[in-house]
Length: 219
Image (cartoon, rainbow, N blue to C red; front, side, top):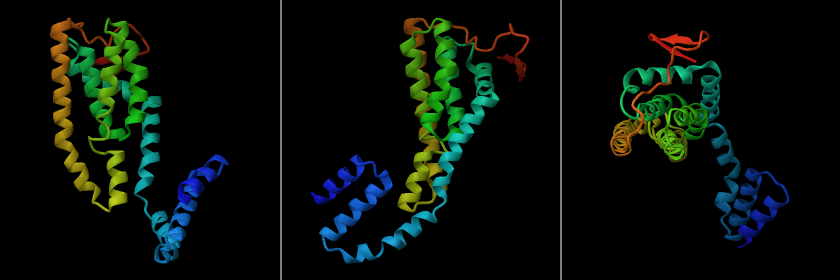
């Protein structure tokens, strides 16, 4: 009880969260008379600071921003449009497969969904797709990021549980592909039942300022 009180009091008076957690931990150890853990706090803190695996997380966010500013995300969309844009519900497939490709680069579901929602949802709505369906496809595809390697959650788990991250990445590959296939199957069924637009249409030939990738013009 004293642990919770100490934590919330420190939190409400504006103490930084990591210090509030540390104070709550110290109160818990003192309250339970666990002198062994109390004497090893400095060693544990030093060990945590020496773990560099979590440095990948801000770098993932940086990569996501560079992708967005540099136009790489639009090039990934145009690449996916080459293969699946012509099918019924093509833009939904483009959204899904672009998310799958971006997941293998970003590793962050939050960064990926924020980027794709700005690019794909307005385009899909403009082409005649339902806004709720467009948002659902974007969010579902963005949630592939924690599964398809590299994954931010897998990195965090490997640091906390002292597990090899390469094995975790390998374990997420097959489930990731199965989920992509399942999502594509759902889009195909919805496309047949509701009659989604047939042309992908993300890449067009209207703007003289467009960039070229693989023979496809993108904006």
